Image 1 (tube, rainbow, N blue to C red):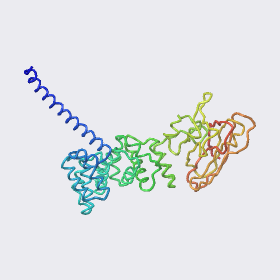
Image 2 (tube, rainbow, N blue to C red; image 1 turned 90 degrees about the horizontal axis):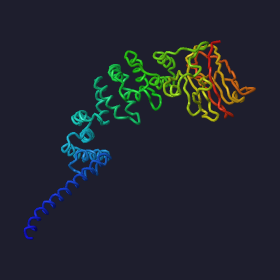
Image 3 (cartoon, helix red, strand yellow; image 1 turned 90 degrees about the vertical axis):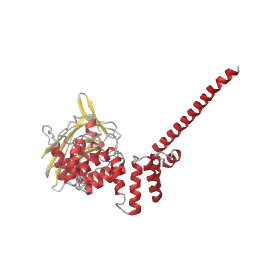
Image 4 (cartoon, rainbow, N blue to C red; image 1 turned 180 degrees about the vertical axis):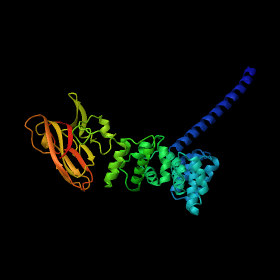
Length: 402
């Protein structure tokens, strides 16, 4: 009995040691997990308190202190973060910002340089590096940094606008166009803006599009769209038409001055893959459908007051006639209206009649208009002017010179 108890004591002791070790490991694992979670949520104070040895948490704390105006404290915390984790780019970047603020611009140069070697996915560091390359005329470095910057995402488009403005410089643009030619994941976003670009940003995008003619990856209509619309809004009508003609080739319909009067493309083409010189369809008011083997634009009986159909034309001064077919209820002439207007003044220079039809079915409409020399561009639009009793089908749009 005595031997059995004596033999079991070491086993109990070993089990107790293992149990305590397991508890310690589990506690450490939990602590590490909590610290990592705090880092992922950008909670520097929590991360630093949970795991002071974690440099990333200290770096986040330093950044928070800097944003709160505690510059000297942020500098000390960022140094502590770097000692713990030398690769914590947020700590190095915060040190650079704190040094610049406390000791004057340029004081944090060494720290910025070190951060630029680490922070390929850190947006503030990429911004600094891109600005530095731009000011130094280092075109290849700027293109490399801009590439990295645009890969990080840009929901407010601030960085994209910065790059659009920077590529006004010829050498910078040449290197940037070479990057675009590799079809990076941000290429479409560079050309497509939340609103059409303006000012220096517009000039930069247009210059890039013009230079892409020499590459093997010409811009698509979708990539041309916002730049051309920006030129139209800036009243640079000749440049808008020239940029469209540089890349887009249209075959006009027989007996007409325009193409695609029968709306033969897919719905997505009119919404996504079109320049302002193609038909654009507002999905709130219209859709392309095939009826009895023929494609039409359907104008909804209850749609938006905005134009359901729209396109710009570069027409010489003179007289023209627009014809189209429409079918639906007899009141179709009163419910939908085709119009031509000058882009420069907004003045309507012609519109379809509101005469009532005599019966349901296809009806032919036509109206004449005269384009003055100072018209800029002609904007064709079709909109619903009052709710109809049924949807209208529109096709066979033709334009003739009088």
